[in-house]
Image (cartoon, rainbow, N blue to C red; front, side, top):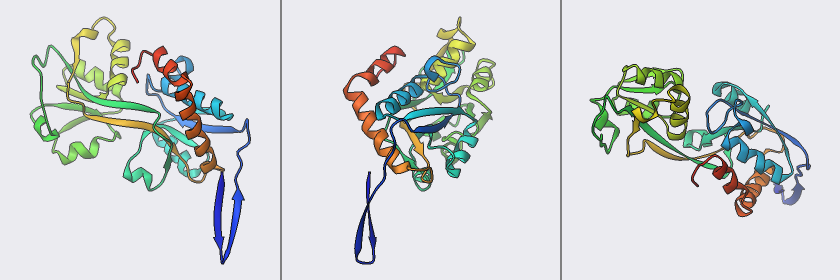
Length: 248
């Protein structure tokens, strides 16, 4: 990667190199099926990231921490990136981002025995008559508060589904793939008891959220984005999604 620096009236051309085989540290937390240290390949998103770094000729090291610690390490520059994250205006003020790696859809889950007909809504305010569950610290807290919804927040999606099953609330907000993965683990014989609203809560692109103070950060990001496009072109990306039965 080349940078042009203007010093007085002199233009200096500086070359920043990233060595092949360089070890790059990334952090993440449990969020099956996207990422988990309990899954082969650490989940489909992590497996895509592994393929990207292999294509880029860079060695990657994964460390699993709670999300707040992931972001602390990112701010300190002790790790290159945390994932998977969606890009927001607030985050862009502090971090850089890779190109989009995968998609995510948020949904409201419900028990069919509790909600027997399709719930339609256009704006969050339309859901004020429902008891809703969520997970503390997720992106939707601000939106739910602005809409005037009263939310029963828990510490994890897993706890949320246990509360939903126990009748503590009507709807649970969570990511669609994550939700079905938890239902399969928690209630393998009762999967058909659950449903999701047709109207998505959100649709986002997930990326690496990148430290600006990690050594050679910009150069690594350039290599990562180039390698991502290459694994899409050569079929590796599609093969990973197919392995996990996830549509592109």
